[in-house]
Image (cartoon, rainbow, N blue to C red):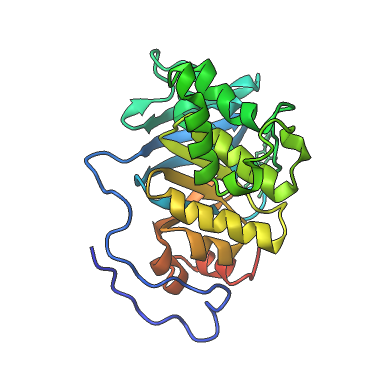
Length: 280
Ligand SMILES: Nc1ncnc2c1ncn2[C@@H]1O[C@H](COP(=O)(O)OP(=O)(O)OP(=O)(O)O)[C@@H](O)[C@H]1O
Ligand SMILES: [Mg+2]
């Protein structure tokens, strides 16, 4: 698919540097990595997500953008069913991960969360050693034989671009690391579970510019192997790291498409207004 680009409207879409248009992004494959079908979500009588339909491509980065309260986190959390604890949560429709419904009878939450990893806004390492933070999930889920855990831990810490900084102190508490290092540890922890999909809810918003750059580079590298969905309030970040962008407003998906196209020629005036910082 080749995107036809019309020039940006002069003086409007200057908020974000736009990456060059790339040839087919991600892995189109026979099925999407995540497929959302007529998904609605409410807390009590309050409708939070309205009839969402979208397909998330494998081995690509999809950014979820939109004003505060538009339902971005609720959407992300729906994919690995983190809302299940809320007593007044109701939903309709379906979400499939690699073709399997997350609500299906055969999908227990432990399996789902092994397949769909999550990284939160604030780094939240376990109060355990750096090593244990990464080894805990795969050991619990018996993903590799015990003797292979040290190799897996090293691989995940390397993938998370943290290995060189921590290899001499794997026994130190995860909480002894800097904020940016803790966030990369949380990414390594998520990778330890060998997920199919990695969800990131504003993973760099609590980090300084240097640490943010590291996390962005990491996201770029990780999409070779993983499907990534990232919520961000930072338009430059969305433009830099993502292949596809979903714009949410008031619980509805206003626009979804290739990031380059959306940032240069948004189809909706609402998207354009948001991207250019006129509201939100
Ligand atoms: N546990 C809950 N009970 C009731 N309402 C909730 C709950 N959690 C979130 N909401 C409401 O759902 C709506 C969407 O919230 P959500 O956190 O998904 O927005 P968001 O787009 O992630 O916002 P932000 O950019 O501020 O993180 C908001 O109006 C919020 O008040
Ligand atoms: Mg949120």
